[in-house]
Amino acid sequence: MNTDYKVGDLIYDANIYDGLNTFLDDLQFYTKWLSRIKDAKTLELGCGTGRLTIPLAKDGYDITGVDFTSSMLQTAKEKATRAGLDIEFIEADMRTLNLPEKFDLIFIPFNSIHHLYKNEDLFNTFKVVRHHLKDGGLFLLDCFNPNIQYIVEGEKETINTAEYATDDGREILIKQKMRYENRTQINRIEWHYFINGKFDSIQNIDMRMFFPQELNSYLELNGFNIIHKFGSFEDELFSDNSAKQIFVCQ
Image (cartoon, rainbow, N blue to C red):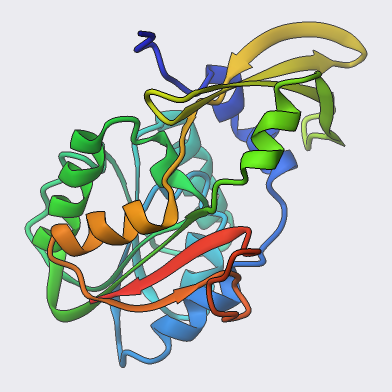
């Protein structure tokens, strides 16, 4: 059984990452829940380059960002400085984080839990959240709802998944190939990068799939009460056709 699950270094190249991830569909959702807690002290686990951290801080929210990739955090800090924001960014692993403070709201956005490949990784992360969450505080996270048809079709052929330009002048084309491991529930995804018209490298972006009843049970087993489960950031109730699993827990 393969155990070399990972996300490739090029995927965490800050300019390549930011060029691909320009949308903010989830920002309004997280802002809405933050606004319900007066003067909320907030912790974002898996903040990346500050895609959500920085606009939330601009809106006046007290937010701390945590990520384990130094290059992404460096970019986040530079963005914050340019925006005149004083944000605490911490380089740490969400599975072992230990801060001397607690928070009113903690969230893990943007499908980050898919890179917790073992149950042990997920449960350790939930333990970290519980340790840092104030009594009555909220825990929010979002991830994909596994689409079996999409996975099966994705194994048949390589497809173009993205084409864009980066701020530092690179033209990027990404072709995707997938192979699903039934035993581990890990989708072995390869992104084939072409930069400025030439093949560059193959980068893994392996993702553990969490099925709906499974993830519900894992949250409850680890001491969380699921207040809401949505299927989109527009607060649609979770259903068969939902692309996302979005949790509000306490």
